Amino acid sequence: MNEGAYVQKLFGIPFNLSNDIPGLITAVIVFFLLFWLSRSIQLRPNKRQNVIEWLIDFTNGIVKGVMPDEEGKRFGLLAFTLFVFIFIANQLGLMLQLTANDKSYISSPTSNAMTTLSLAFMVLMLAHFLGVKKFGFKGYFKNTYLSPIPFLFPLSVLEEFTNFLTLALRLYGNIYSGEVLLKLIYKLATSFGIASFIPAIPLELIWQGFSVFIGSIQAYVFVTLTMVYISQKVEKE
Amino acid sequence: MSSTFLLGAANGVQWGDTIFYLVLFIVLMALLKHFAWGPVSEMMEKRADKISDDLDSAESARKKAEDLAAQRQSALKDSHFEASKIIERAKKNGEQQKATIVSDAQEKAQTLKVNAKEDISRERQDALDSVKNDVAELSIEIASKIIRKDLNANDQKALIDSYIEGLGKQNEAK
Image (cartoon, rainbow over all chains, first blue to last red; front, side):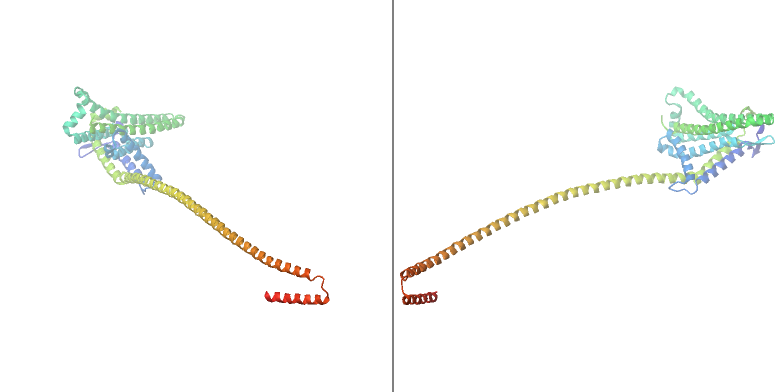
């Protein structure tokens, strides 16, 4: 939200710190969580290893559902990192919202369109890059824009933009709306003192629970669509 | 929402965020690959290999066991056959032995019988011969007794003497 945006210019580049700080926090949480889970790796997995192996199996399953195995193997790490990062990012704002002096410091990084647009931009650039790398620019162009029917070319071009926007804005919209409602319930809780504070607690609780669900689904959807877009670029239709 | 995205454009997009997130994500991915993803997926692959190896070796072990069982089965069958052959041979041997023993015994019995018969006939011949002698003597004696029936004492005496003499002679002759 702009009222809390904390914009700082560094080397003439505008950084929105109320977006960057939670991103950094998310990354740190993700790293330490997975670092902790992946200690003492053994052939016979212990409890923590089971958790991380389940996660890896899950994201590998996403990739496997979209691409053949030998092609998809390269994207396991990307899917894994993307999924865990977005998942934690979605949950961060549910647990912690920090606003001081009208400047937001902690919220879900994914409740800011810049974040999701950046991520979508990144993965789609990667997809296009891999397409060019695999088929050459001509092959890539033909595969992406002229197949199956050449006269759909304008639609194909448009589709690339809509892919990008829908991928980013779907995630952003879901998480942002969730946070808006959380804040609204909080406002309700503080508006009439104790009379509204107590009934707002279960409301907030229910909405948080639902948001956890939404956050998980959106992380899954984002990763799945990313893999679909990549596979469209690296495989001949 | 209007704020960040639409008004944000009016304020100037904070495009530094994009750079920040790109760098953040790539660094995070590299770190995870080194510390979490790499070792764990390597171990998972190792485990998958081990499981498939174990399955293979279990398969080969099963095959080996089956072969062994078949071998044992055939050996058992062979030994059954051999045993029945041995028994048969033993039976035949026994039969043969029995036959030879019986025939031997019969032969022996036959010879014994023949011998006995011979003995008996010889004895009888001897007995007959001796009886003949005795009859001759007895008849002579009876004749001499009849002849000397009405003799007197002297004659009697003479007769007895002659008789005794005759006995002596007879004894001597014997």
